[in-house]
Length: 229
Image (cartoon, rainbow, N blue to C red; front, side, top):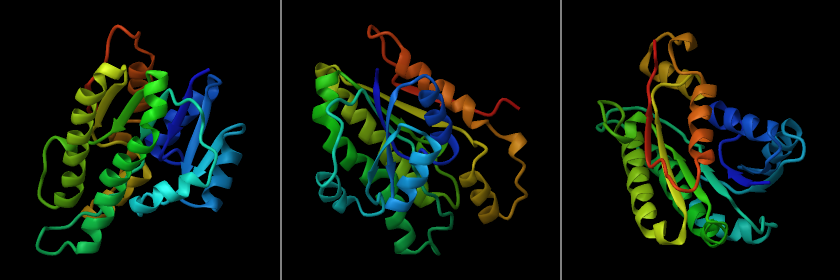
C-alpha cells in the first residue's frame, strides 16, 4: 500500500486527487494549516492521517513537523495547495507577494527537503501541481506567476539532482480549473464565473494518478492540461 503526503487536500484539484487515492485504499497523510482543519480532513477521509503546519510560514514547518509523527515511508509527496492574489505590479503589496511566494514556492521547497530522505528510501515521487502561469505570465499575474515559475525551477533542479536516487519528479500545468480558487480569480478579474467552461478537477486528478502509476521504466516530467471546450 502506497503512502502519499498531500497538501491542498480539502479543495479543488487536491480534494479530487485525495478522493481517488482514498477510494483505492492507499495510505494518506494530509497536510492541514491548523488543528481545526486537520479534524475536518480526518472526518472527510476516514482512516487518513494528518500533519499540521502553516504553509504561509515556511520557516516554522521544520519545527512543527518535528513535534508530530511522520510516516516511515513516503511513496509520493503531492504539492497541490496554492494561493493567488492578482494585481498590477504598481499596486500589488509586498504582503501579497510574500504570501504567494511563501505558500506556492518556499513551503513546497521546505516540505520537499524535510521528506526527501523518506522519498529516497522509497524511490518515491514528487508531484508539483503548478499552473499555466508557471509557463507564461500575463498582466496582473506577476506575483502568482513568479511563484509558479520558481516552482518549475525547483522541480527541474530536483529532478536532475535526485534522478540517481530513483526519485521521480513530475510537474502538472493545469489550465483554468473549476475550483474555489478559480471563483476567486474571476471575482478579482471582475468577470462572471461559469465553472462549466473550465477543466473539471477530476480530469486533472486523472493526469496526476497516471503519472504516479506509470511503470518504473518511465517518468512523466512535464504535463500541460488545457480546457477542452
